[in-house]
Length: 67
Image (cartoon, rainbow, N blue to C red; front, top):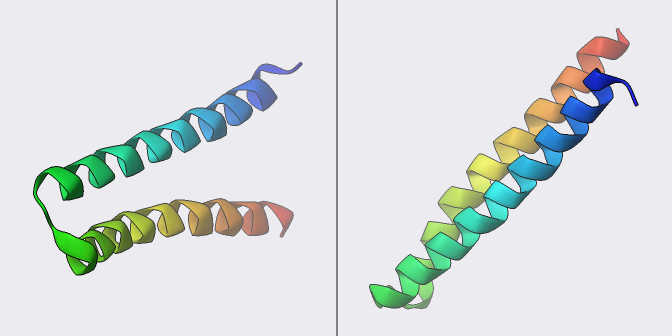
């Protein structure tokens, strides 16, 4: 396996793991602070926008490499 392929694969996997860990942290924060349903939804919406940005960046880079 080429080092570049391994680096890209590990970056995607490790960032995915980091996103899951951040989701757990947000859930735990919402539970401990008794944020309620709406507050928890807002917390996860903010996290979701960050994750969406990461996914969009991946697609944009892939599209630019194809040009």
